[in-house]
Image: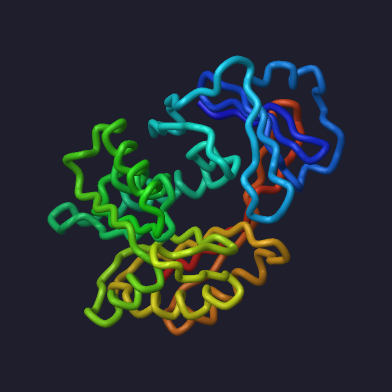
Length: 285
């Protein structure tokens, strides 16, 4: 299970299965609502002294190598990383649930057809990919990080999805999508979670400010004629749901549909509210 226990003073206290973790949360500026709960933390992450510098973990006892937790029906392998992540993002839980429902509806509506083809870009350890595959989609998951793809493949095994049509490829995302455009990709849905900054496997530099618009134009060109949606999530500082929605509309507005957007908000057991990222989705008519 996952639970946000409390948030405040620039940090959040979370439970991932059997472990409670304290990590930075710049959006949590108010005082904690349950100060006593923080004594339950098994470990805490502290960022490095400069941008991009590795941080440090402190644990009660030895640092865990890995553990698993079942969150919203998906088993995730978790471990502390130098960036403060543990291998699973809880923020888009409602978006993952909506994705699963869309896939199930597609399969039920067209049982005689091949399963819907879903493309998961910047897939990390596979939250969207695993959810879509479990619901019945044929999924291709792309990430530039070979360790992330290896992690996703272990999650596939943890969830007994090895017999499902789920491909995972370590490749620079813009290059993959550009190649799909040249060969006429035919995707029923696309989910992408671009980082603010990133590097491809050969040092290719990614910046959301300059890279998102051309990437979305390429995504628009690889959609099937009856594609159902494109979903974008982001954590870019200075962006708003309205700005993300405008980028989606500019790239995908030629195709009839409706764009909705919002913030992902986590509500803690203590009652604290934590704003945790943006999303915009284009649903096609």
